Image (cartoon, rainbow, N blue to C red):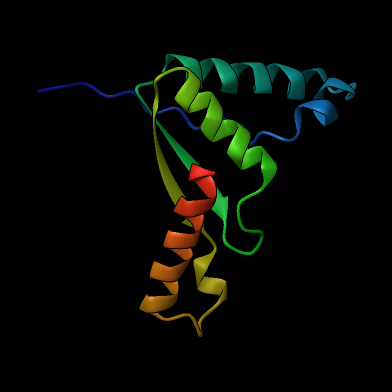
Length: 102
């Protein structure tokens, strides 16, 4: 039997936006999110299907790699495209993985 700890962190905006923000709570939540990535064994990176992967998503994936953290990529809001087929999902996955490799 094993115990697992799941942490749902705040979303991460661009670092420049956060550093310029006067919102102390946002800055603290970003610090905590980054600390959670550094200390975790596995991170789930949740992408928005409507937006596709962003530069910030790539930065978070790099942060995982830098700290030896496995990164599971999940895509949210796929259902807003009801016309998408299973083959579309596979194509999206391949394109996403290719872009993450580069």
